[in-house]
Length: 114
Figure 1 (spheres, rainbow, N blue to C red):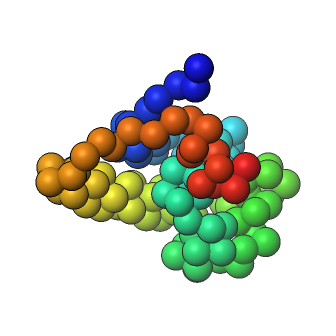
Figure 2: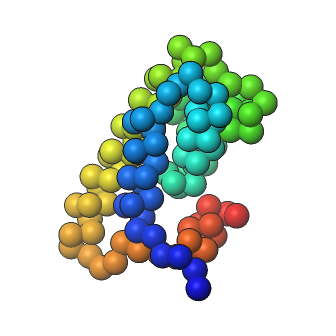
């Protein structure tokens, strides 16, 4: 039976990881950035554009081929935190007047194209 997770919980989970992230930790930074497209439901290109880098550059970050200098990671994480907060706020306001905020993990993977 597939696990059911609230979309808002998924956003909050990544927000918690991003706000406690030590940007000097390469693996931790890579993992948070790798998770961002799926959780935000954004393409790598959309995120790369928001961070003012190319899509191939962002792809190299999430695949661990290269990583930005530590000084450049803080603005990227700050953007992610802001985006997550905005989406949580919007979902919370929207879910008050609508039905369930839950979906199965498998549905989330399909939505992400996996």
